[in-house]
Image (cartoon, rainbow, N blue to C red; front, top):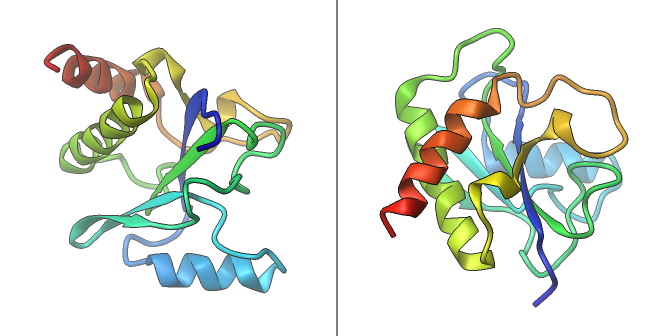
Length: 140
């Protein structure tokens, strides 16, 4: 298994009805071998989908892919507020990934906090997500 030192959170900047299959097709259309993210959270219904195999380096945060896992939430959080139900679902998914990789909530970043590309992604403050992840991890 490759070394993972961080989890990077993204948004798709698409409508809520966007899917893993649409994202995969979009990324392959750019000439990529597969979807760039390791996990994708669909919104209707809330569902965690597996994207790129976790053992492969992602293509989601230029300059930060080698030792990270990318998880993307469907939606555009510049145009809509991340709702509580999706936030809680995402926090649980990220906490589960933290446990799998032996990481802490402080190892979870928004796309805009890493890499070499200027971006506003994930479009929401990571403070609430990190706090919920920390709370879940503290309960063991």
